[in-house]
Length: 94
Image (spheres, rainbow, N blue to C red):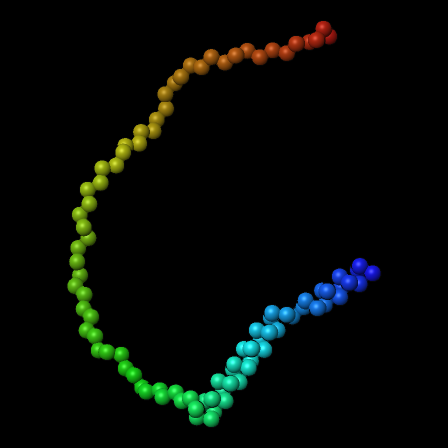
């Protein structure tokens, strides 16, 4: 019985807010279309033009930069390293 109630609640919750938003959007679009079709709203569109602008650029020079970078020295040298001796105990077996 509890399963039936849960399924019934899930069916009621579907499409709530999304459906309402869609219906409101469709109604608004129909109203706007009717207002334009009836002549109540008009859109006076006039041709426009961009202003004439004279843009000119003069070539320049790159700025002078004095960079002092660090020197990286790579090389090899001999080193003597003491390595410990590793042994294995027999645990009394031969």
